[in-house]
Image (cartoon, rainbow, N blue to C red; front, side, top):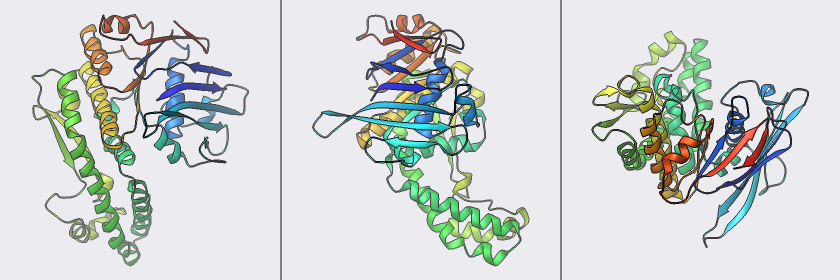
Amino acid sequence: MIESVYLNCFRNFRDECLEGLVEGINIVSGGNASGKSSLAEALFFASRGRSFRTHRNSEVITRGEKEAIVNVGIAVPDLYGESTRLNIGVGIPSRGRVRARSSREEGDVPISSIAEILPLQLVAPNSHVLLEGSPEYRRQFVDWGVFHVEHDYVNSWRSFNRILKQRNAALKLGNSSAAFAWDESFVNYGEKINEFRRRYLEGIRPWLEEAFESLLDAALTIEISINQGWQKEMALKDQLIRSREQDLRLGFTYYGPQRFDLRFLVGGIDWSTALSRGEQKLLICAANIAQLKHLKDSKGSWGILVVDDFTAELDGTRQKRFVRYLMGSGVQSLLTDLDGKGLIESVGNRGESPIMFHVEHGRFTRT
C-alpha cells in the first residue's frame, strides 16, 4: 500500500509530502486549482511514467524549474505478513527522458519495473473515453491487467509490436516478400498475446460480475463482448494469408491482436449509449476495482484506485453505494473532492471512517 507521496517542483507543489495514507479510503479535499488533480496526476506519473493530462512533460514542472520529482513510499507485505518499506520515484526533466528509480536497485530502472511495483488505476473526468473512445483505450485497460498477472506478457507484447512495425513498414513500401517474411513470428506472438488476454478475461469475469451487481442496478444484465482482432472461427495464420492483398493495398496489417476490442453490453446494447453518465462512471469504477481485486486474489499483490473529482456526475445514492462497496473491497483508494463532506456522510456508521486530508496552495494538512 502507498504510505506517502513526496512532490517537488511538480505543478504547484514545492518540497511537499503527503504522509499517513491508510489501507482503506483516503480523501483529499480542496478548492479548484488547489492541487487535487495534480496529486492524482503525480501518482499516475509514478506508475506509468507519463501524465494523463498532457503529452508535454515540461508542463508538469513548476515554472522556472528544470525538473520535477515524484517519490512514493510503499509498504510491501512479505510471505510472513510483515511489511518492508520501499521507495520508488520518477525524475521528470523539461527535456529528455523520464528517469525512474527504486530503492531495490542502484541507478535508473525501466518504467515497467516501477509500474509492476505500483499497480494503480485512475478514474478521471476524461475516463469516459474507455467507453466512447477508440479501441486503443479498451486494449490499454485489458493489457494493464494482463501485464500485472502474466509475467511473460510484456516481452511477448514488445516482440509483437516490433514485428508489427517491421511488417507495416514493408507493406507501406509495397515490398511483399519483406512483409510476409514476418508472418510466422507475427502469428507466434499474436497467438500468445491473444491467449494471455483470453485467460485474463476469463479469470476476471467473476470479479466484474460481482462489482457490476453491487454498484449498478441489479436489473441490468451486463454482458462482455470480445473482438480478438480477426474472425473468431479462423486461425490467425489463415487470416493473415487471406488478407495479404488487402494489407498491401492498405499499407498496413489489418487483422491481428492490435485490433482487439472489448465491449460491455447492457441488455444487448453497447454500454456507452445504454447508461447515464453517472452509471457509466460507476461501471468504470467497478471494472477497475474488479481488476485490483483479481490482482490481489491471483498474485497476492495490492493495488490502489485513484478517483479524481469523485462526486462529479454521481448523485447521493450512487456515492453511498460506491463508498460502501469500496470499504468492503479491501482495495486502497484515494478520492479527491471539493469538500469531502458527501463522502464522509456516505460512510455513515459503517466501520472505520476514511482518512481526510485537505490541500490548499500546494500544501497538505490532515483534517
